[in-house]
View 1: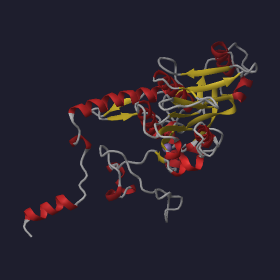
View 2: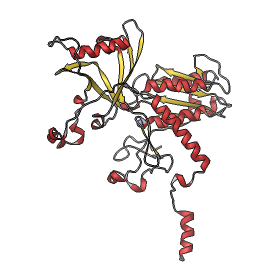
View 3: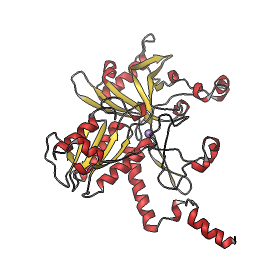
View 4: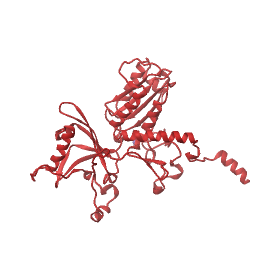
Length: 383
Ligand code: MN
């Protein structure tokens, strides 16, 4: 076969992935950059699932979305959202067709691995004050030492009022978890990576400055408690009714000399959450009702009242269906859902954990993961 003929067949038959930059027009590239700036802003505003929900409500309200209330009459073009306990959110734009035709649903999760505080977290040891933490989700523990950390969350006081806590953002002092210096770390260095930093040593350093001169008391801890009281009016007992999360004190930033990548905390899965939300905000009036679900608790098994195992999503959809006298099952039968999360892109630095012929590649578009699971596809959806 002549070379020319072979090439013709190859062009017709062979799978030939192309780098996205070869496909982009100048206008598309400009739009992509603008989108990425908005995405970075979304990440910086949404460092916890609570902050994500708050920011989503701000963005959605600016585009005409209103809080959904049970029994509300809904008509084509109406835009509503349901705030599930401040930690998860569902939004919908009512379509031209009624819900018996189904709905288009985009779903993602906005919780991310982090270090939560234990219920009674504060202690002093050797004139240093610390928080004890309990990690949430799949953290690689060694990544959390020696990086600047900030504390975000809410505290419910004895009078029932809720205080938002934000410590270590912007120019404020940061928190940190210490590690060993090299010449004391010889034994630690011999341990497997997953054991070198045990979870019980992920204690956050809070301060070293004593309050008063009574050497027998927890005077460094008292100094920290006093500062918390001065700033937020919280006492040690209030930690029991708090939800405080430690996250990296670093904002999203461009990566690479060509600035072609974004480095940030919490891409998983806010990158899909942002895409699902942005699509809904930009949708206009769709043919089918469009729904965006930003779920909490995916990282720990989708449990709890704000996770996808709760009745929250079914109830929201049922409410929408009820407003049109449509049976939920009929809606579901005709619905389309894109449940999106992140996947790993091929990294030549760690080539042996990938199967290059079936890996996702940077700049090659959306990752399509046909199945997950282990061994014989155990736990896979085979979507
Ligand atoms: Mn995820």
